[in-house]
Image (cartoon, rainbow, N blue to C red; front, side, top):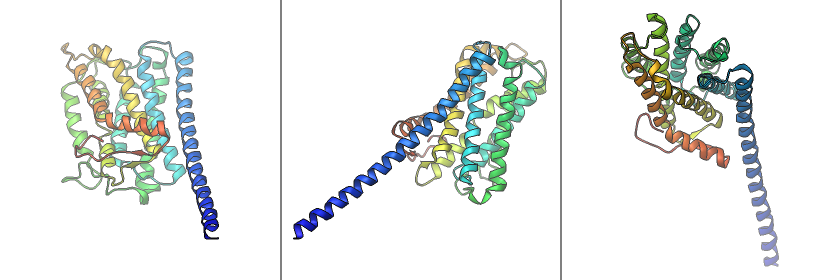
Length: 304
């Protein structure tokens, strides 16, 4: 009878729907487990460094922030090499971070004024920053060379005005360099070393702007989870540094005794964190629900 056939058909449709929902749920659970393991590994390593390789001083927050940066760029490399593509990655952000790490290393390898006070400042902090530079260079190589065909240049358009394609980062790099020349602390009593560290500090606060801008230009608003981990790790690192410098900014005084360099350093980090508030919120929702990170559309240049 027709009713029997209908009942049988509906039964199999319901079974297929249940199977599909079960499959989606299992994928979501798997993704959530991977996220938990990823961050659990990072925090376990952090505890090891704190208790074994650090003296437990408050300045360990600087090392912890550097570890988070290195972790972020490590995650980015895993995303790129496992997926064999660089979709959703901003070349300009990588260029700016490359400058950040080169400048900072050129200062801390020569002088000790801006190093953490605890044991991690003896060698570990240097190693972490060097590895972060290597990871950044590797990602840059993939964007401009190995996986260049997957680079989304049409979305990575920050600062593309009256400059060659891909050179938009100059609108951040040059003004911030001038600011660092004019206003910088004097902990190393060496102009080039003090300028290099200050430039890295100021520039890092703006280095993620091209990446956030690129997120905005993507029509779907969907951010790959590994790319989201990368950006969140960089933001988390800056949050840790903000916690340190908000209590230690007075140490960043100029040769004339002015605290203005410290004020600018703290304000620049604070501004970066404010620009990332939306991202942090939607990242939290994605982790909580084990779903893709979807950002809403906004008209503001730096806000996601």
